[in-house]
Amino acid sequence: MNRLLANSVLRRCAINGGRSITGENTLQSSAAAVISLRPFDPAVIVRDHDFGNFQWMRMMNSGAEPTAKAPSVKQADSEKKKEGDDEVVPSSYWGISKSKVMREDGTEWPWNCFMPWDTYESNLSIDLSKHHVPKNFVDKFAFRTVKLMRIPTDIFFKRRYGCRAMMLETVAAVPGMVGGMLLHLRSLRKFQQSGGWIKALLEEAENERMHLMTMVELVKPKWYERLLVLTVQGVFFNVFFIIYISSPKLAHRIVGYLEEEAVHSYTEFLKDIESGAIENVPAPAIAIDYWRLPKDSTLKDVITVIRADEAHHRDVNHFASDIHFQGKELREAPAPVGYH
Ligand SMILES: [Fe+2]
Ligand SMILES: [Fe+2]
Image (cartoon, rainbow, N blue to C red; front, top):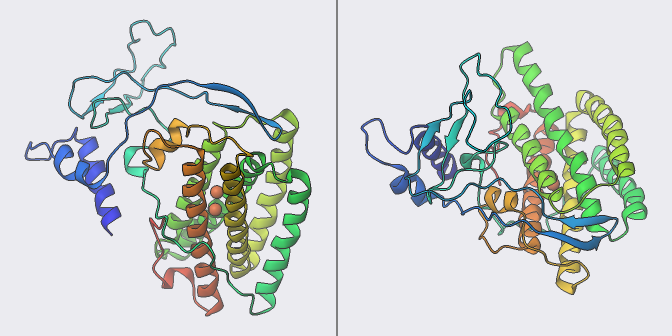
């Protein structure tokens, strides 16, 4: 509830340039008191350290120089070219211009893929060891299916957890999108509210995609690995789509067990970082902003918050499956929107 309130306050403040409708500057008082945005680190580092089949790299950077101005939102004139900017700005025939969002320290918000109000501090107190004991045929089928899926993954990747994580995140972001999409269509067909579950599942898909966006800052996939992603996505999307239509309780249970495996994989990843088998490189800038991490965070901090996310996904999906097992629809139980 507090998080939703904080997001609401921050969004309103950012859009209004940190000013309330009475003209008072609220961003530095209320919103900034709730969340603190970390300054963007503009350093660019290219490393040659091997990480499985991939090469470590830090490449994305679009941070703006700090300015002395207070936090504000400015309407950028998209028809004008910036001084010294050779890139041609698309014509704004439709009158759509990009809002410039500023941090409280005066630097420009560098990301278009997520905004300050989409960021959060991960809840690391979540129980990582929780496991749903299979109780009936559907549970056992889901559990065995996930264990079977793990065999080729273990054979292919072994302990190359960077590659493994990046590839698995390309799959992990699919179920939330499929479930959210099908619930959306159901809501339209039946003229019914979804109870917040559309938003909760799409949030999960977006969160998983941000895991991927973080991993691609650290590893560079080879051409055959990109081909594998294409193939796996084509198969997995369609299979999961059919499973979700046929049995949402099975679909959510499978995802619940997949997330349990993800927690396990990231725990092993952390062990390799702690033992020195994987270098604990500086955290990517996108991760520092998305999880509101300290500027000097490392890969270990990033993997720790991603693992906590996976544990939250585990809970959401087992919960969703339990609702179906009780003979109810998801909309009858309040959705865990904003559960991180
Ligand atoms: Fe993930
Ligand atoms: Fe996940």
